[in-house]
Image 1: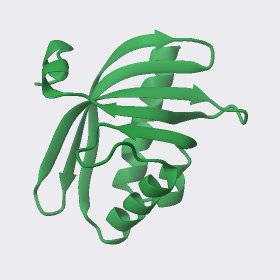
Image 2 (image 1 turned 180 degrees about the vertical axis):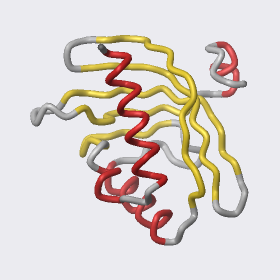
Image 3 (image 1 turned 135 degrees about the horizontal axis):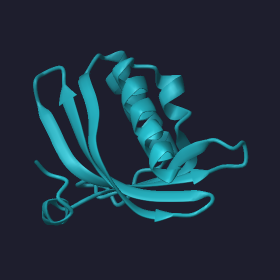
Image 4 (image 1 turned 120 degrees about the horizontal axis):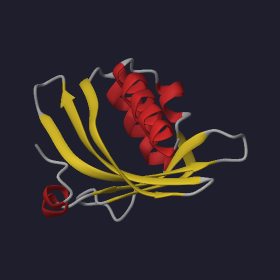
Length: 132
């Protein structure tokens, strides 16, 4: 069950990003989200995430987003933590590929949303066999 929830969330996250549907994409992100591991930032919250996505979508900066693989770490009734490999291809041809650790939480409206994402150091991605 947890694996299916995680895979569905990844599918929806990629589909909404690729469709450049800002509202639907941000519906997958918790208001209390915390993004860690971005060079130059201690952490990124909901407003920064939303502003960045809106900018990327409106200016057609993304060509394709995809997730490959899933390594379940923890599964509880209202929380699922897993690792996956994220590939973001820009419309300029630049590719940003990295392992990420994702924490989803079932919020009070019964929707699963991202509450924390950590960009993994390359050696952790290799160790977890997330890099191809």
